[in-house]
Length: 310
Image 1 (cartoon, one colour):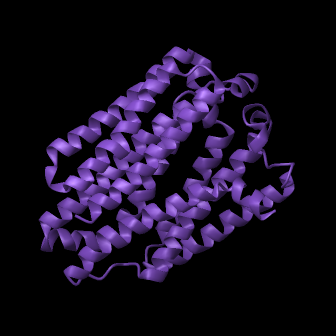
Image 2 (spheres, rainbow, N blue to C red; image 1 turned 90 degrees about the horizontal axis):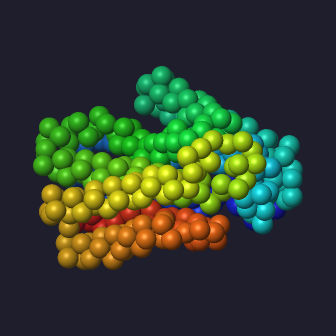
Image 3 (cartoon, helix red, strand yellow; image 1 turned 180 degrees about the vertical axis):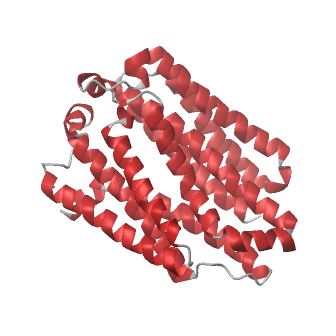
């Protein structure tokens, strides 16, 4: 049962979400605040609650997505279906309700803690958008992909937003350091957006058989596989150009070690993925490409760590 639950909520993905936020807070923001005796708005315990809110939103999104896509998943990935096999659909709905309730209560508590009650509205907005994604937007060309990519970028952005007051003070006291930190966070947000878009389009190509049967209008269903490959390649190539531009325009962010990691740990797999995009024909090949795209995303997270410790 526990194994099925962890699969339902995509536990490795939740761990990556939490890790990204902890890295940004403890490796980038907090050391800078401490260096200039700035008081962050969130202490360790309250920051962990913010991470928990993000995790609950994400977990709830995965659960409702699997509930609604149950029949499609029976075609696209029958060996990975959990709903109505290991977890009843009624239990899954209860999990969805509990994740959202716990997340909202924590978000409400945090909004009181920072004395900004309207911030609590961000939680139901995020939940509503993810529900809309699962029920409608996911079946539309490009729109659903863009929403998920924005959410992935927002994982980093919400930490920056939460500590905006202390960051403003950092800008006043140490503008060069604040600019450096802002550049790194902005870099990661852009990387998260572009890499997620690449993988989302690849996954649409992988799932085209089930999506056709469910009358979805994803990019490969609506415009064909050639167009879908072109869109995926455009985002992948855009990501590669962005990374090269970053290295050339901001050489101060890189040591020899971090530059080597960028080339061999991120760019090389990305270029391989671009080759695979045009060679892929069968579902297994698209699955392999999707897994490579996930590794590229993990490489970007590791790159954040390398840039942060400079």
